[in-house]
Image (cartoon, rainbow, N blue to C red):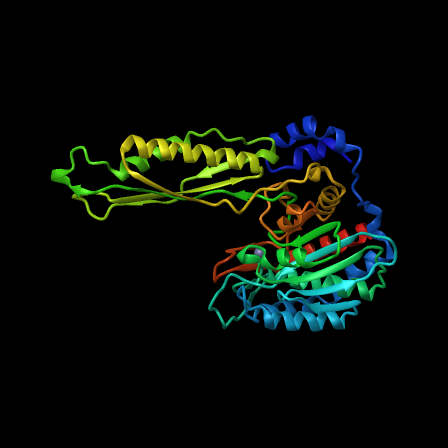
Amino acid sequence: MRRAEIMKKYFKFGLLGIIVFSTVSLASLKGEESLFKREMVNSPLVREVFSFIAQNREKIIQEWIYLTEIPAPSGHEEKRAEYLKKQFEASGLDEVFIDTSGNVIGIWKGTGRGKKIIISAHMDTVFQGVWEIKVKREGNLLKAPGIGDDTANLVNLLWSIRALKQAGFKPKNTYYFMGSVGEEVGFVGMEAFLDSTKEKFDLVIALDGDLGKVHYGALGFGGGRITFRGPGAHTMQSRGVPNPNLAVAKAIERICEIELRSKPPEKWTIINVGMIGGGKVRNAVSQESYFTVDLRSADQEELKKAQRKIKKICQDVAADVGVELKMNLNERSKAYQIPGAGDSFLVRTVFDILKFLEVKEIEVDPLGSTEANAGIERGILSVNLGRTYGRFKHTLREEAEIDGLFLAMKQILLLIYCLK
Ligand SMILES: [Zn+2]
């Protein structure tokens, strides 16, 4: 591969990427090669699948609209699941079923001793209580809650299968295509499937996020809410009374001074104090004051280290000011990295495909928050691939670009073709 080019473009971290490549990853550079070759695009099969999706453009858009208008807030995915199951069956997959969690699984058995690969898109949306959805089409845009996240990828998944089947593709690998439940409430469906299955999977490819964004690591979350309490007093009697607001101010100042790593990307860590509040009236000392910390890291040790520092600061400040302390920090959402994942054949192949497709703003980093995390957590090489370009995700005015969907579909088709 053209190393200089990759160094420049690989990470959104810019210079950091170069440092990572030249220090950490040289050893593994030889081992893992991209599977993508430009000539592949001229193969009869790839031509066939590309022309198939081009010919079916309007049908694809119509089905995208149809699927989006089936409401599926997390926990209520049944109707979408039913539809997807029917389509999986009709497309000629070898085995189709709904598992105990409600995930729709369609297995395409391989011809040889290939890998076992999960490719998933999530069926659920964040729109609890929204039971009427009408998609608006305006030029290259579709507008509706859930149009992008992640309905666009259900369509990508379905039509990738149909296109490959129609062109006579015979995979060497065995593919588990999956419409998952509960992604938006903590990857519930994927976690449950991986926990319950007896199969050993080699790769997890989660279809989620914007086109061009590729994550090969699992971002950890360690923030939470910190509360200080005191006895309170009227201003006139407040001399010497411990003030929770003062504790908040002191703690925030010191937390913001914690030194956090920004490189290499696998150690990247960040803290933001997003909310602050306390007291009920102007003329009394607050009895209770709080602030929130959003703490994220690519690395579990860095996350723990930062959490320990936050705890120490808050304890010291509470003792110093003379107030009570209550801390609620997230201990569950851990960070996971697979050594060498950033240089793996999978990431390199995806990167080359995105370059070939001239996708703008390619970002490859270890800061993922998709179902791929469930795979990474279990030591399975995993990435996520985007669905299209869009705006206003997780809001009622969500938008998605039509042309971007076809680009994303090509990305998936080429990846499956490369993996075989
Ligand atoms: Zn999503």
